[in-house]
Length: 207
Image (tube, rainbow, N blue to C red):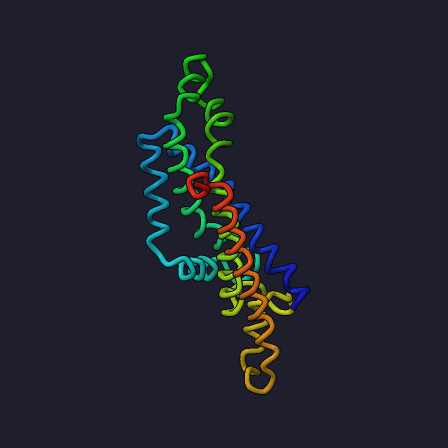
């Protein structure tokens, strides 16, 4: 179980890393340039959000084939819209700030303003979402592995352990109990960390 934490946590962090950068780029471009580009990106995100995340991930892996890499890709795709929408909302509010207008008046290019003035100040909600997203990614990866679509035996991933030993739940319950407990405690820990970061980084909650 302890060794399996390496695989499960790697899946969580890698998935969030891809979704973080992809969502940040798409959300920032959509909000700052607006127009047809904003509509196109957001409509694609809406289509992805229209499906239950785990079911869409199952469909993607079913097409690509089972395996840990395809599971990573599928989970990244289904979590991407949340990051893009949060980043878009953050950029929309920040681009109206006075310091952005001052940079425009000084002749800074739109790309420079976006990269140096807007994006760094818009990352706070994304950082909080990323912490919570690790917990969701671990759960989704465990679900895919449990169904035989994610990590394959003998890879020691928590969902794979649950799936392989589910028939032994009555004769050897510890084989199912401890991987399940590890998933529960890890998800709970990242959720509490995300709540703590939100409270610490959101000035409105400090008053």
